[in-house]
Length: 98
Image 1 (cartoon, rainbow, N blue to C red):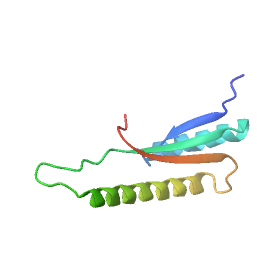
Image 2: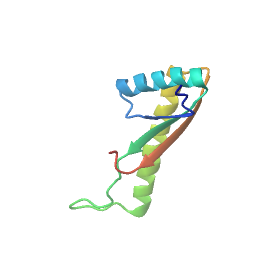
Image 3: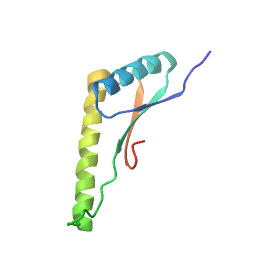
Image 4: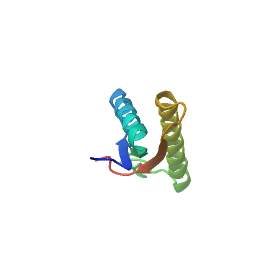
């Protein structure tokens, strides 16, 4: 029988992502699996056609986006699994979402 030890759930914070996390938590409870919740933020371009961000501004924007994503992930987890029955590891990365 299939007994997953690790379950990857990606999120874009949509209703469908919440449903996927809910399903993963149900499976995780049953098999004592660890759930990995991943959100990928599209890479920020430092320069546009007529303007470039300084390195400090770019890092500040990335930090802001990462903090917002981590907050939203924590809220998602609290809504779906308030008692934290299963282990959920969160990760926010920058890159190509595909």
